[in-house]
Length: 275
Image (cartoon, rainbow, N blue to C red; front, side, top):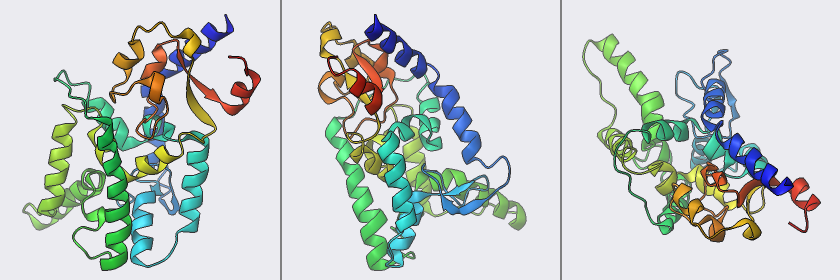
């Protein structure tokens, strides 16, 4: 009975995800006009956005790499948040992830990318966030923030509107940045969370911490009926019974609608050693 209650509680929590995402969106969009840009937030959200409370951790990493400095505070924040929640941040708190979830509701045919495609996120992190800024500096056209689609939609487009109104003509952002934004937006209609799946360097960092974070997803073999329900629920195309909480999981918790998968923490897990 306790097992079923735990599964029910987890699936009930998952049904509230869109409301939790909406609540976090208010925090990131600076409704109180705090503009705490000297403080690094834990989500992928451009600090140049007119409505941004905190600095973007990836932007901080890229800029510090260009300065040949180590952002100890930012790394500490990412380590603490990742050690507590892992990629639960991606599935429940990230504003750009929320946008992808909303667009994915469009009634279009969806395609599933292979799991190995998620490794490209680490290429983006190593090359565009760390290596290129370190070697060529912030002015390089492949500097991450000059390519970022979140920066394009949250900062570049509002700046374009403002500049165009002042100039009396349209002032476009760089062609490369707009092209990337259009491609990512188009992909959102046909692939679930294409940015998170293929490119997000912050998701890559949190994914590394999935297996050591305080909160984690747990598969219960004794509850499994071999019905493959968890397979159909996983929008990422994974197999939760074999790869629950993998590097590629964003912890949307859709799979917890199957009673064999629950959200746990180390305290509750330690209290149920025989489960």
